Image 1: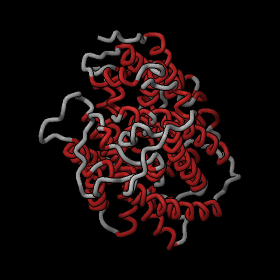
Image 2 (image 1 turned 90 degrees about the vertical axis):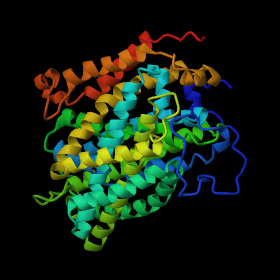
Image 3 (image 1 turned 180 degrees about the vertical axis):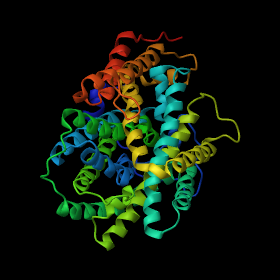
Image 4 (image 1 turned 120 degrees about the horizontal axis):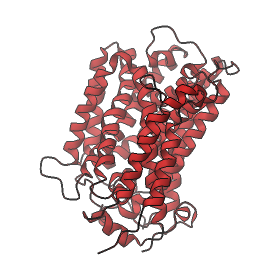
Length: 475
């Protein structure tokens, strides 16, 4: 079967649907049965589901404290007015979601996780670098940040020590990720309606008391870029996991439906919740309040308690994806079967343990830790995305059988992709970074530039890969 052009993947007439099933089309494996697949291609006989399950799988994890806090940062930390913040947040979310939709399309086509598909862009050996980075970012960074939000909410609700709250949530999250793919989808499916109703109620109340016409504190274009980068970094931070949750869909699944459901779920949830956060940021928070208390402090008691419960549930919805995707990223480091005792489920437990340590270390200053992590995350995601999207465009007419052969052939190399990735990071971070710990020479000289690391990194890597990449010689 020949691959279709990238632009057709999202716009062409859907392929025929798989034959109807009598059981739940989204989930066929019993909830308690541990998934045995790792990073290897999913056999056609085990494929199941409908692309609409991607809508809730990508929407539910974004309905929580971490997403709202992006909006809070845009107003309270970066100094934007509400309207400016909304434009920056929505634009960043839109670009990240569009990329997510395009990447998700390859899940049903090849039946492998996103980091395995990275072998096409970086070669089998070169792909070890982005796979390891993604495991660290998802399994440690994002897992820690998302779990912290839930832990603070549980602490506010119950009065239990923050560390105890953290450990309770970690245990629940790791269990879902340990069981695997189908339980993750099931959890997100039932979490989304609960989260959506509560956060929309909270949003209505927050908008009633917000100072939406209040001018910003003068952040200017630089602040706009910071807010845009934060929103894009948060949204595109899921891109390296895009096909992880689409790879069990039947090969005949509509590419257009796969892309639209994935991208739309991500875009709508990030946009709506971050805008609610921006409205919340126009109200001065009590001094010394935790990030979750500052958000829920604007609500009446009954709704504040419901919102705290939703923050807990939303943090779990995100962290289960984080820890699961980290495990398949680690599994993708080898083209061979994982050794006994170190399967995907075991890797899930190990990454959860390391992520717990990172979250514990950030308990005392979670707000600043999240802000720094949020901005830095796009520093690697943007160059990686530039290479991967160019490679996806380059192979738009390559037969799927040939692409699958490259994925499984450990001799396949693509040095151009790795060079472009490293060059994008090497050029963008030292020159354009604008962080508390380090300010590059360009923003130091022209503070109004803001943080251009993300767009520069993407452009450099994409351009270099387009110039250097060569069609591999097939044996």
